[in-house]
Every structure is written in C-alpha cells, then in structure tokens.
Length: 171
Image (cartoon, rainbow, N blue to C red):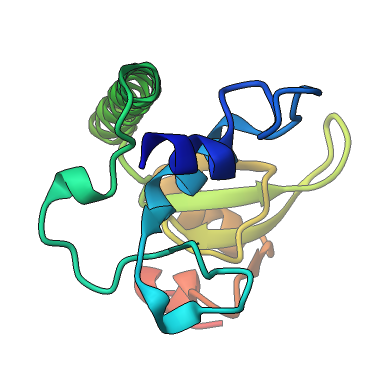
C-alpha cells in the first residue's frame, strides 16, 4: 500500500517518478493528502480507479498517509495554521477591545449643532438637533440659547430634524 500511495502522490517536492520537482502550493498538497484514500472498484476504468474520497470513514487514520515523513509534514502544517489562527484571534480581540474603548470614550452627542459655511469666517448655514444625520462635516456644538439666537437671527432650520419645532420657535 505504501508503494502505491507514493506512486500516486510522490514525495514532497518531487514528481511521482522522482525526476522533476513539482510546483504545487502547500495547501493544495495538503488537501490532496487528505482527500486521497484507497477505495474499491466502483470507479474501475476511470481516472479515479485507484484513489477517491471515502464514502464513510471508519477511523481518522483512514485519511492519513501511512509514512512518518508525511505525518510530520501534516503536523507541521497544522501547527503553522494554529499559530496563524491564534494570531488572528488575538488581533480580532484587540480590535474589539479598542472599539469598545472608543465607544466608552466617545464624547456625548451635543443637543444642538450649527452647520458652518465653506471658508474661514463664513457665516453659519443651518441649525440642527444634535443627532441629525443631515448635518454636514463643518459643524460646531452650541447651547440651547445659541441655537435659539441663531434661529431668531434668520439662520435656516434643518428641514429633517426641525430644531425650530424642538426649540419652540414658530417661524
């Protein structure tokens, strides 16, 4: 059985006849190792007549190669992936901790916001309620009195969040 297994799969880095090296990715080689187990005659006369995926596994050792070299290679491959998985888990946990810290450290949403115009010293454009999604990026938090004064001075109220209604200003 060992000779036939080597005849189909060859050694690591060599072809089945031992003449020229193969160029195959490690994961493709590993998957081929796992998916290649002897099966019976149902595929006689086809390309899969000697090897195919098992229909039902009786033992885990049925899918493992029989020789020590390949078993150690599989162990090394799994250890490498476990290390990668542990590093990815640690990075994801760190990102989650940072996200939660950012949520806790985020300043509270202001009650009132004034959207500013483009350029230095340009007048305000609109008054918004603090959590309005229509407020632009150029904005500044203001107090209730400043928002009232801005509306009285003629600065437009946002049509989405209606700060004039919330402040009790009838326009």
